[in-house]
Amino acid sequence: MPSMRMLLRTLRVVVVLECSALTGVFAGNFVPQKPTVVWVNTGSGVYHCAGTPYYGKTSRGEYLEESKAIQQGFRANGGRRCAPAVVIPPPKFLISNTEPVSTRPPDKSCILHSITDADTIECEGIGSVRLIGIDAPERSQRPFGTMADSALASMLPIKARLGLEFDTGTKDRYGRTLAYVWYSGHMVNWRLVRNGWAMAYRFPPDVRWSSALSAAEISARNERLGLWKINGFVCSPANRRSSRC
Image 1: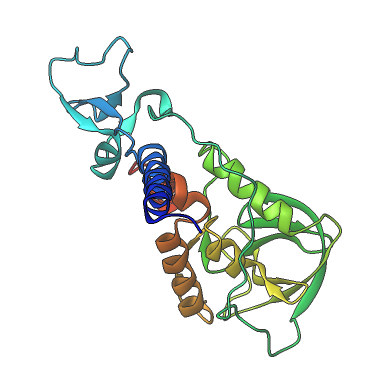
Image 2: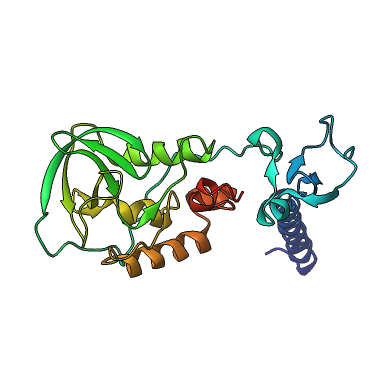
């Protein structure tokens, strides 16, 4: 049998190895990222990135973290943010017990012709269909808009037969059909929000599923899914359209 001294030496080696492994984890995976500091021209409302000609050079201005500058309504010079783009893996879709369940047949069905953006599609014989209760980045809001588009495209194959559920209204002011879109038993509107590719967007009187969509947004934000992981909604789509950020 091994002596007590040998057992103690073995135990000591194991403890040292475990502590070294933990030290590596904390040193490698939990180092906070330094915030990106920008120069805000308080006169023009535009901010500039480090290394650009106007960084720290305008007569009026101050240094701010980029996220705070955006929150205060300042906009990036040239529309490009200073923080480096973060590449995230292709979307993995989360199924939750709170996912809406359809208890009624669709009001209309259609064949998917194309995807306009992450909250608008084109259906054969119907035309443009706007997904009710959600708001996703426009394609011009790069890279977030194209990422959200890709998420929707991975959910809906072209030529898929979709079910359309109407709420109080059936058309918006642009003539688009308003609908909750169902495919293979899942509400696409909800799945986009729950996986972090769109925000909930309450627009009365079409609010049948607004509670479920709002809850989905809270869960996605808390879990930092999809665009929440890379601060893709610091400037919400609605605020972006209104040029508030």
